[in-house]
Every structure is written in structure tokens, then in C-alpha cells.
Picture 1 (spheres, one colour):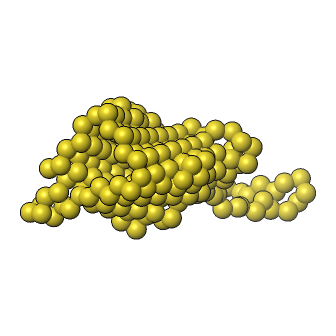
Picture 2: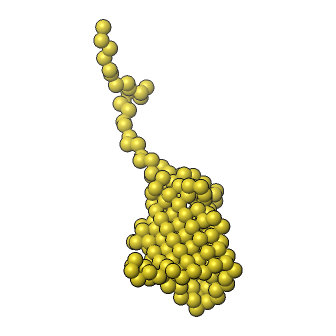
Picture 3: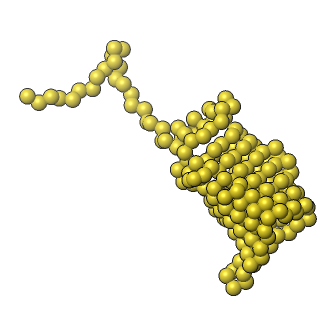
Length: 195
């Protein structure tokens, strides 16, 4: 005896209408925005996707994220170890706005533009690495406690404090022309190398 599949009718007598299921990334974005509105700190795994922007509540990144758009941080962004990484593409612009903080506790690769505005803090923690192959502009406070390698421009008109190792890679043969332009305050308690 074969069983036939029949559509069930609800008690109202009308057929149940199937609704499309939202994609997972939209659900996570809706979830993140609902937490941001309620003021709850978000700490979840991001999977090699665009950094959710703008950042309006504290965000802890525990996997690799990218940025290929103009992204504004108005809160606190933490790149956590051991798996957190932030890779900025050439088209990406990251603005650490006044009153916000950006802490790299693992790996940061900048291929775009990173702006740290007046009243903002960017910290590269002890044991963390930050590689710049495009442009970093600091008008606020930039603190390097780890390893910072610049292969292009770092422009400081704020306060740059180096407690770790800052390497200015100027290698004409390798195509790198690292420059550190300082019109602000440079406090060096670590090592500055020019290669």
C-alpha cells in the first residue's frame, strides 16, 4: 500500500503558504543590530566576512574579518587572539572615530586606509602584529606594544607611543617605501628599525 503525500490544511481551511527563509548572514546582522540597539556587547564568531559596519556597540572579533568599504567605529573594536585577524583591502577605509577604541590583540593587515581621529585610541598589544602596506593617519593616540611593520605611509600628528618594535621598511628593490612622518609627539620606549 502506497502512502500519498497530501498537503495539510490548517483548521482555517486555507493552505499554509511557504515563506522564504532569510539567509544566515542577514539573521546575524539583524541579531547584531538588535544587540546594538539594546546596548549589549556583541561577542560572536565572524567567518571571513565583511566587518559589520558601522560599529556602534563593543565588538569582539575572534576569527578573520575583512574590510572593503568605508567603516566607522564609534565604540570599541577588539581583535582577540588566538584566531582574530583584521585584513583591510585596498579599497577599504577604517575610521576610528573620536571617543572610540581599537585594540589589536592578534593580527592586523592594512592594505587600505586606517584613520585614527583626535580623541580615539588605537593599540597594538604586546605579542600582536600590525603590518601596514598603505596609509595610516594618526591624530589621536596610537600605542604600539607589539610588532608594527610599515611598508608605506604612517602619518602622525597626534601621539604615537612605541613600547615594542616599530620597523620602517624602505626597500627600493622590493617595492616598499615605508615612511614615518611625525608632526606630533613620538614617544619611543622600544625599538625603531629602518630596513
